[in-house]
Image 1 (cartoon, each protein chain N blue to C red):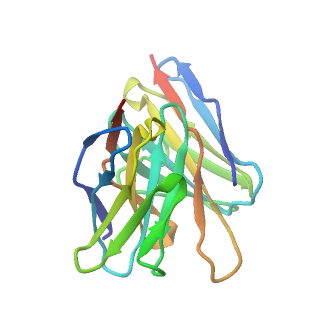
Image 2 (spheres, rainbow over the protein chains, first blue to last red):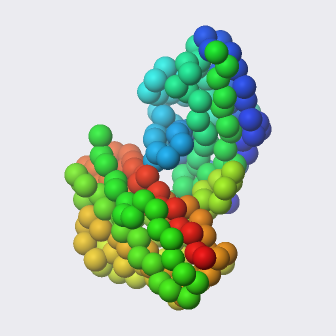
Length: 112
Length: 119
């Protein structure tokens, strides 16, 4: 079965500093992995996805994630946080029939 | 980018009544749509897969007679919560899988969600 574990339920950073959101996955085969962001009262937005091409994946809004098979990790990073990055972030793994399994989510707050 | 809409965005109903939620792909065709439920401060839980022209498939523990799903066209899926009870109060989110050319990676697009409150 496929699953993801987000290691931090809440991350707080200062504006302009790096952001790191950690995610470990469990998959019986080569996974499809995604990061989605959910802003209050808005729909989920795809930040980036990994589908067995390059291990370093660049997404929107300056986010990127690195797939590390040896560590079964897919951590999300951004070099410089912006106030607009405050939101809920979900690490997601794709499995059979294009279904998605969501991690528990990480709440990001950005301090001015 | 592809847009998925949900209607209504928010609904309040009395216990025992039924509520229908619509999910539409506005600028693409979606043979498959998914319905999720999100509790406060919690992650999304997949409820069912909606397939155009065939019966929906439900995840374990989801009552198919309570959560009726219809996928009548390539751009519309509906979720009907029948005989709603307060414990059905939740945030319901749909997603639509965009079919692209053979060999490419399909992408899911999410609707903005529907907040259901059952009194």
